[in-house]
Image (cartoon, rainbow, N blue to C red; front, side, top):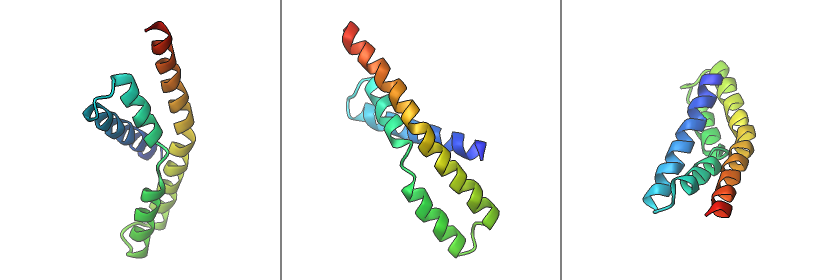
Length: 94
């Protein structure tokens, strides 16, 4: 569950960051975008349910993935808060 959670958080953070950089955002702004994407788990839920339906994912693995989705959703607000706090500091100093 921990490995799935870490991979889920990192992949969404990195993907959002890269998308932000391609959109000419600053590094900090791009991190905020990535942090905001961490809680987006509904697509993962759909894919996991399809995997179970077609017997590609075991019931045990299904439970682990659902827990990882829940944990990433719970972690996301803390990442966003931290990212926005640093963005606010940068704006105040800048």
